[in-house]
Amino acid sequence: MMLSKMVTDFKAVNNYLSKVDWKIVLSAPSVVENWCTFKDIKRSSTKPWINGRILKLINKKRALWRAFKRTRTEGDFRIRREFSNELSYIIKDARVAYEKRIADQKDPKSFYKYIRSKLSGPVTTPGIKDVDGGVLDNDEAIANIFANTFSKSFIVEPNTVIPYNNYLPERNVPARLKHIEFSEDDIREKINKLKRSKSPGPDNISALVLTACVDSIVIPLHIIMNQVVYIWSATA
Image (cartoon, rainbow, N blue to C red):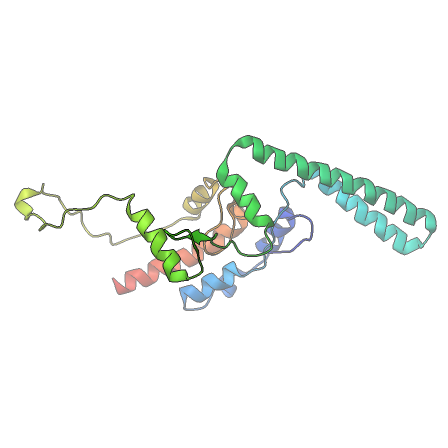
């Protein structure tokens, strides 16, 4: 997907994706290869405090810069510089207001997600102390302490023989599923139900991008999912 330094222009992204010939791009025999091709299309992160009003101001700032490059006059340069300084304060105030809304929501997931997005490096495990009060620097020892702590939160299952079937209620096993079909409408419906505040999965595609570009990505997702079904049906 297209990159922008300030904000994602989803209209441009959708326009770009709608022109892709997905049947050709996703023509590899391997599902994994097709999926990697799809998810590796360049995408950008967005600064959520950049709203429509600020985006228009950013575009105006760029237009003023282009005007100065054409004329090279001191007057146009001064106009562009004053507008740029004013816009910097507007963006700063919008960011502060956005961060305040996160703090006021009392939602720890949103709070820590935003904090992690601002960190320059990966999140590391904090220092763990042993029973003697010393700080551990051994990964295996730290893992064992975590495992021992977490194990206390689970019920210990009895180490007995599993009862025979006559002690368990009979269950009717349904017939084996022989036909699976995903329509574009099914995929669109599932994507539209995603919560935009949720963190992305291993593919690093955020729910915001999926929902904003649903009409453009439903076709490639439909191709990939039907390829999975076809391979599954052939080997079942």
